[in-house]
Length: 110
Image (cartoon, rainbow, N blue to C red; front, side, top):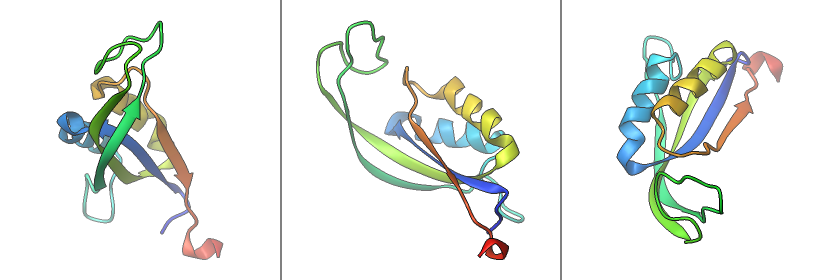
């Protein structure tokens, strides 16, 4: 592992998983050696309740929504994180995108 990488984790509706994976890979995330667009996904249920003033892509204001989502994880060079997140936001349907940026240690850092 390389300490110049971070792990990027976010959730997306199943309907947009492939579109989002392509956008982030095209922006430079998910490169490992001679491979590109590397990700890991797991499925689950996302829950949210849009509040007054929200403009939800899915659901209605004031109603609790439960939808099938994919959690997508990938590695990303630190210097490309902003570009990758912008690429995701361009194709992701949610008004608010929640994501984690997790710093990684390299073997030399141990």
